[in-house]
Image (tube, rainbow, N blue to C red; front, side, top):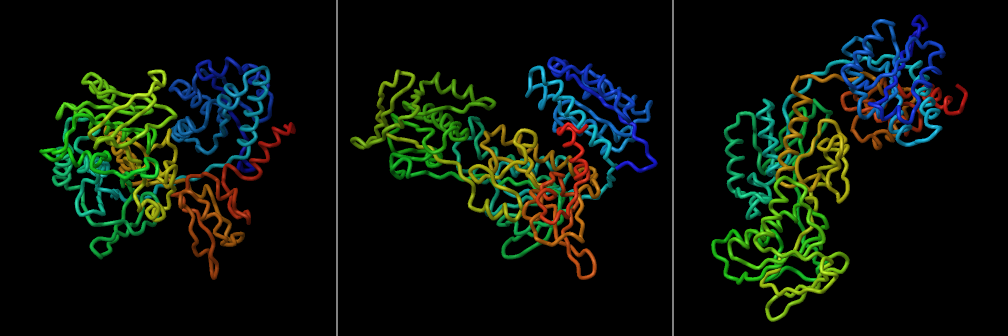
Length: 559
């Protein structure tokens, strides 16, 4: 908060967001009504504050009018708060003396009409009241370890380790099996590419063996992880022995498993009914004894809209067509082809005679007849006319499921599981490879249904995330943004259970006294601990009670 000797000089900057805000909000009216308020030394309307010219206007006004508090009314803070905070750091103003009002998503877009200008004015006044009570926060630099642990030796894990090595970061790659490769060896071909799994695996192993920055530990698993981003301590078990490593970040690339759901189909795979993985194993044999004149594929029984199952179906259908000249029938609800080269793969299948039957609600009827499999389905593209195909071989889909160790590993890492018990991203749109615990990243199908191109990109993004965090050998940390009062703390552990970032621990706080403590490098300022603490022992600077009350007074009409 401002000291008694410091006089407030507040600058307010209104952004019309290229005209999208000013179409429904009268910014000139708001400007005139704000100018007369106390402590306001500047009110400016700009075209786009996030652009270079807009930032220069802010910097110039702050310098010329000696502004020490800033209110910016623009778009969502999630989008550009960091832009303005970086600007303040550059010009020498503490970035925590900034208060933001979201008048685009919360006003212009959400409340079109005559009242929207009044709504926007309320939002700006709320930010203004909060700005009056803001105080600077200190930032310090903390040294970090530049080593990275990669858990999982499949394609995603190997590619992430290679990328880390290319970026001059040491990577320790651990795999619980005796050799690297994961599920790569299970497929006859990979996701629509002509390159064989053996060739891809060989190229990755060659790159790993030639790299001096990659340590490989097979038959190994992660037993414990402590600390916070930049300074983790991992305990690794291998061949009955335990070793400890210090590292700065962790990339989880533990893949997935598939499961045949017999309760859905009503039968188990047999001689002429195979799963996708069973078909891939059969195709590896140089000679196939069974007749493959007519082959059917069924999608969307076990895992509707699965990208991987769709790609495997098309890849294997094309392989059968080219190798045996088989008649291929694909029974499906939808084909998920939103990836590089997948539309071409589908067109190749169609041009070579693969026949697609599309069903919706009524599932295909499967029965055995004279040693063959008969599949009947109502095709919605043929006016729900029933069509039937006799197949020498029927290939059924499998459901993608998390590996059995996902739950135990999530407990070790203190990260959450999302839909289907796969790992949960922090924000699938903004931070698609970040976990909720800073410094831990995801790569590959352990958290998403990815085709080969996406999987490789995913692994690279995770590696780049670790590089961005660790490459300088230090990180900037906000000091005591969230603080525990040890005298009020009752060690009820409510905050520890609620914190999604593993940022709170119990420490000694004095003679015969223990209390919770916030570890600044791990804290993301989400505020959950402050809100949930029953003893009111935790304060969140920038969201103190008096600051929140000052904003509520605007809504109540007292200001």
